[in-house]
Amino acid sequence: MAKNAPKRLGEVLVSENVVTEDEIEEALRKRERGEKIGEALIRFGYCTDTQIVDALSDSLGIKRVNLGMIFVDDQVLKLLDEDFVSRSKIMPINIAGRRLVIATNDPLDFPTIENVRLKTGMNVETVLATKNDIETAIARYYGFTKTLKSLGIEVDKQKQSDEKFYDEMIKEPEQDASESPIVQLVNQLLLTAVKSGASDIHIDPTDIEFKIRYRIDGVLATEKALPKVILPKLISRIKVMSHMDITDTRNPQDGRIKTVIEGRPIDLRISTLPTVRGEKAVMRVLDLSRDSHGIDRLGLTEQEQKSFMRLISRPNGIVLVSGPTGSGKTTSLYACLDQLNDEEVNIITVEDPVEIELEGVNQVNVNPDIEFTFANALRSILRQDPNIIMIGEIRDTDTAQISVKAALTGHLVLSTIHTNSSVKTIGRMVDMGIDPFLVASSLSGIVAQRLVRRICTVCGKNEAPTQNEKEIFARNGFPNIKKVKRAVGCSSCNNKGYKGRVAVFEILDVNDKIVRMISNNDKEYDIVTQAREDGMRLLVEAGLAKVEAGITTVEEILKLGLD
Image 1 (tube, rainbow, N blue to C red):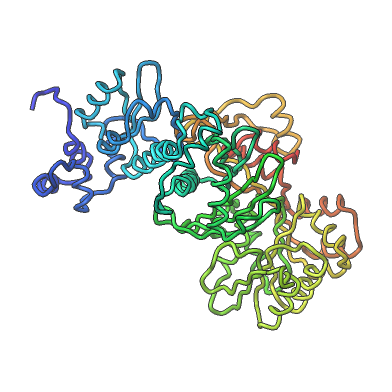
Image 2 (tube, rainbow, N blue to C red):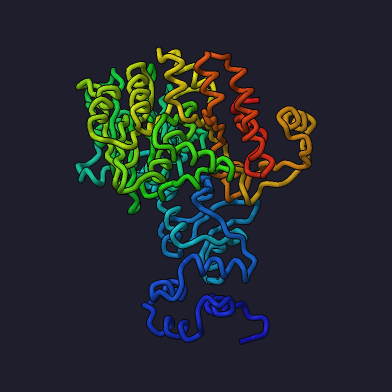
């Protein structure tokens, strides 16, 4: 081999100790016609796709990207056709001047790179991604374009008239339901949502079109805008899947879909709402394949975790998790159940609806249509000899009274409640008609929480805090902050600057002093003062501590309106 000849994939993998020369020779000898060496090595079990990408990144200094977090513009997709990228296992992701950036799992496949240059007339820059990520991205982007074309929608001509489109739809030939373009469109929406890590899918009608929006890390962003003429067919398909009445377009409806997307079990909660511009639908996405989140994975500090464990380890009493909708309360409750789940205890939950099915836990769905409410379910549960009861939400006086009764008769009760802070929960219980003495006697602890976005670990950079930030820190007990992280944006975080979310906690341990204050109906301010003397950290303080640790930003904490 010439001195300056480019390395081959096998040589890199051997030099990085991923495989041996004997394994390379074996794979070369046994590989199928047209099969790449990397694919053969993976098929024979000599290495994994991730090991190959990591080795190439380390050896060649080529950047690795997460395609699931990158948005690819339609203008980029037009440069290469689906057959070529599928056959070559590459994904075009960006254009920078006269340079096309492609993702590949084999940057040493020079014939393919040269073909891309010839097809596009552009210089080619490679970044690394796993084969699975590349195939998923091809299905997401090229599949979406193909589906829209099958519906008569040209991606670059989506402003065509409704009349013309309607005529084309009438002439559409009969076809199997599973191959229907509308079915393919719904499947594509769900696939994209799951791969993007979206928690919700919004279908929002406007005057002449409707928008597909995904909520990712708590923030809504528009994915597609499509002609409004297909909205009724899309909503009808979703209603059929979730067993709703497709003939009723004037009343709100709720439904549920259990499906499997790329081998992952997905639970979808569907809600439709008639608006002046047409029916709106929201699909909440629950990925049931994700690992159960134990308490150690909630984002608690060491001290917070000790306090949390102390609350749920008591044999009786009520532990409440408070916060607004979408603040992660249910996740925290399931983490508690995961921690407490044991053959020696009888755990029963009553939920609306059951979010995640847990082995070894008796879970009950409420059904208001037959008057099987939280309160009625609790009355029955108390006759089932429970040790631990989890209530999805305390939302009325009856449920609150039975929860207090259960706690006072020796049961551990876990539930959620909608309040803005831990101490405000006490007043909420009293407002529900519970005597302050009973609140004091039954409450074991309250956990208030919020969710904030994590700053991207790839592109986040340290900077000195501004004067305003220094004042905020100093006002909340952090006088010596020298640096904070700023969100920048890169391909890894889809240029958002943030990736993922983490919870911020305020934990109130109802000790003897707090019990006396609640019984005496003391003011909220006095209870907060005492709790802080006992070591409780307010939500804003807990949030700023995560800013100090470089986990999130001051902007994210200020959005919560806590300062």
